[in-house]
Length: 157
Image (cartoon, one colour):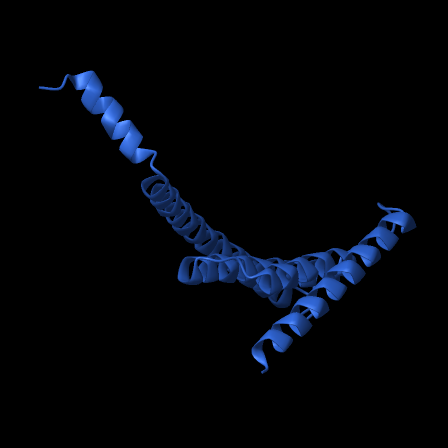
């Protein structure tokens, strides 16, 4: 008869065998992805409700039909929700395909940086920071174009 210690060591060695260990990691990744997507659904719902309340309040207060907030701030709220939806799509694709689609990640990054440029406040930031954002957008756009081109070449015979 084997002792409890021997059984435990055998269990650990079988758990850390490559196949079992990798399967355990994948299950954990799936669990974390599902928790993240559920949390993101809550965040998107709250952000959408917040946006609707802000729009309703601004439209119903005098002067009617004008926004008390700067239009740029409202665009920022819209883009926040759009970015959250893109993140949710990234997680969904990961859960379905068990891969991260680089094209989708770069598109999400482009939207996030475009949002930053749209709501850019020149009184708080320097022109060099705007130039850095422009360079980042150029690099991401070039990456996106290269990936799209490579994917289309791989698909065509």
